[in-house]
Length: 96
Image 1: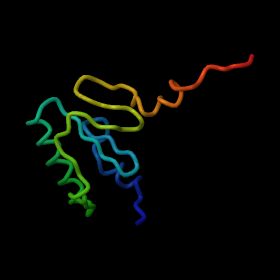
Image 2: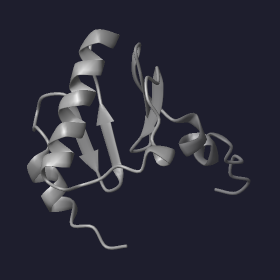
Image 3: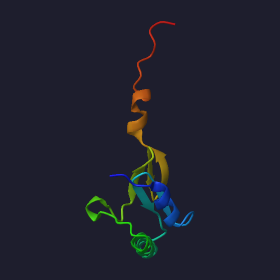
């Protein structure tokens, strides 16, 4: 399937509550009521532009997501430890 993500970026509301990257759409909100409203707006916008979301691939009301190599949660943003484990586990050099 070929999707023009530039079009998807054009139809979502920039700098509000949606972040789009390749095949991920992340919606962020302060509380569940606001999240429900943001989700409704996003889905209606996609429908208006004849874009569809496959609900079997969607996850809703998550408290923590992995996005662009970081873990984004209600506590903030931190590096995904699985991404840095190769560096942390390096063996010290034996020769200088």
